[in-house]
Image (cartoon, rainbow, N blue to C red; front, top):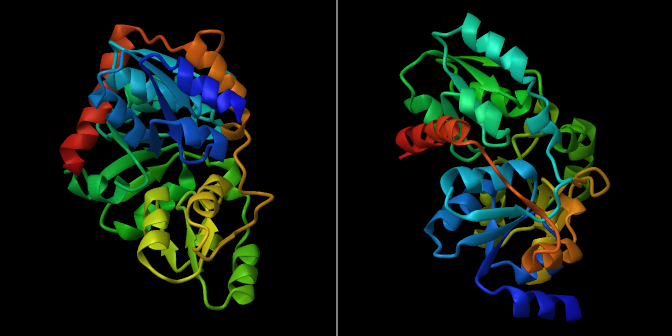
Length: 300
């Protein structure tokens, strides 16, 4: 593909980071592929002074929080995250003021402004470990009520106050649809993301982050029904065609915001013709970084 060759030729020291949900052509030109926090950690260790992020806005913000000296470019400026945007900042400020003695734990899928007012940040793979390690017995978790409810079941000794938000993509899957696929593929494991609602997670064989689902597919020689964004299925089919995988609700589990980024956007961002340079004022960045630092402290 000519445009892929042009991207490789014109990188000139630019590092391309792509979330696992991106299309196969974008993943083929990426220097680092993975989930949002893995990408940010990788960027912080790289010598490159310029980074193009193929994902949604909060991912580019996390890269900038951890690597303020780098020029961070979001390949498609329109790529947002409905779950991150569901947190009303003024309402969160009021909650913080009213319940000042209760820590706010925010999912990494949040805006930099939300992270700046949070006490601790978590990923879906680290949330249970981190919250268990926190000394407080009561906390506020936002924005995903589904992930929060799943965490609560694993830490019944703590009280988790949930924000009323969700990922509209994962939340759209019904328990009846999950059961139907299990009946259709009786020999397969159903592995779903904890952003799915409890009707789905309650019938799953495995519930975990994207990395957990990928590990299951790679480590076990069993068929897997993938209950997360279709990019994971596409990645497996493109790179490991011998693996027997099925996609749960392929018409529903598509993140339109993730799919906004095209290979043409990547070319324009790499060559300086497009994309958006992410800017965060230093006060906000440092406050947001504290919540990420706390994640490392409690998550080791």
